[in-house]
Every structure is written in structure tokens, then in C-alpha cells.
Image (cartoon, rainbow, N blue to C red; front, side, top):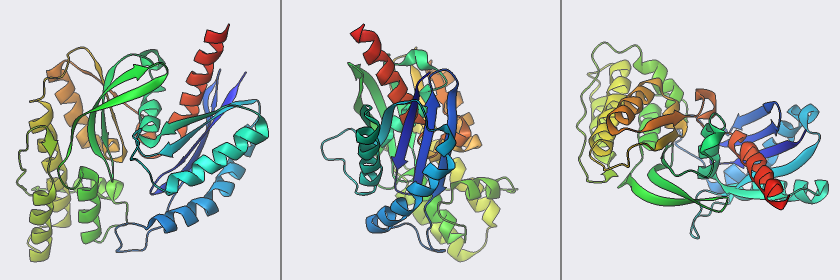
Length: 318
């Protein structure tokens, strides 16, 4: 038996996890960073401060599962690019380095984006080292990527991204304007279920890209005018995102037969999951989600990724 620790200190969540080579995921804990009511985010210094406070508490919670550790996986940067850097991730990286040195086990550095992909791949480990598409929709990211492999590392090629704000930012900004807590995703989803006549917000068409700034302008104007219920506004926002996904993804020449991994906090939304499944069916893609609870930020992907890297390296050395 071998166990692997995962750590992720993203913009709005502190996360740890333990993956067992025989039992799978045996522990996972996370704490959403605190954002003042009415605010739409945190500074990097505020993120770092809260991560430093949260990590010891989370490790205490999973303490009974920390034994027989053979490797550590950590999100060291947002994306696997030379220009991708955020101080928040240094908290998790530093904790991973200390654990690696103390326990004398290897440290595997992943990107936050890879952590999301691997959270979904836990359900289908056989696609490790096989090319796939990935759609990452979260508060700060709106990427559609073609993913290939170089040895054991993922190589990302951008297929499309956002021209302005992301779907996650749209949801959060509208949520705050409606008086909901930040991050607002799950609250907007619950609110939308009470709609009886969803608002119709216009969606811009940009080839191989997304644009939601115009949608936000229309929504904020609608909220100020006060002629629509919050439920109809929330449902209208989700439907606008769904129409944008259909417009762009259905027109792109995806390679039929590949898996499409759809992850990020936005992809925990049930309505949008159904939209993506429909798109995948029409494009000949097998859509793979992380379980809803692991679609938003968490460290389970890093723990699983450490297990996969360790297993492959051990197998290649024999």
C-alpha cells in the first residue's frame, strides 16, 4: 500500500487530499477563502494570509490518513506556462517541499489546471497518456484546450479562450449584484431553479473565442431597472452561457472520438453539464466530468496525479 498527498492553494480555496493506491481517495478537505459581503474577490496578499492559516487546520483534519506516504502532488502555478504565476500557489508549493524533504518522498509539481483535469481522470485512469480535449470554466479561466503528452507531462494547446471576462466572472459579478455571497456559482444555480420566465440576454458571436462583457452589461442594466425577478435574471445568465457554449463549440472542428474533460467550478452546474453533454454527442466526443463535488477547486487531482507519476516511474525503473 502507498499513499499520496495532494495540495492546492488556489485563488479562493485551500485544499488537501490523500489518495491510496488500493482504496482510491481516502481523505479530502477544503476551506473556501472568506470574502467580505458585497466584494468580488481578494488580493493576492489576502489569499496568501488565509492559506497560511488554513493549511495546518486541514492537515489536522486528515491526520489519521497520513501514513505510508510515497509522494506529494501540489499545484505550483495556475497553468503550465513560463508566464503563469500567482503568489497564492507558493503557499501550497512551500508546504509540499517541506513534506517532501521531511518524509524523503518525491514531490510532483502540477499546474492548477492539470489538477482539475486529473480530478476528472480519477474516474477513468485509462486515458492517462492519451490525447484529449479539456474545457476549463471557472471564476478566472475560460479555456478550451487540446491536450497531448510529453513523457508523463501534459502539453496544452489553446483552442479558444475568453476575449474579456469569463463565464465564472459573469456568474460571480451578477451574483454579487443580486446580493448573493461570493463565489456565487452554487447560489446562482439554486436561485435559477425558481425562474418562471428567464430573461433573454444577447450573446456576442466571436469566432473561436467567448465574450461575456456584453452579457454582463445587459444583466447589470436589467438589475438596476428592477423589472425582473432575481430568479429570472439568474436563469437568463445561465441560459446565455449555454447559448455561447453551443455557438462556439459546435462550430469548431474537433477530432471525433476523443474525450472532452469539462472541469472547473462552472462545470459543477447541472444545467450547463447537460448543455456540454449535448454538444459532445453532436461532435462525437466522450464528455468526462469530475464528480460535481470535485469539479470546483480541490486537491484530489494532485493526489491522484502523484500516484500516477510515481506508479509509472516505478514501473519504468523495473
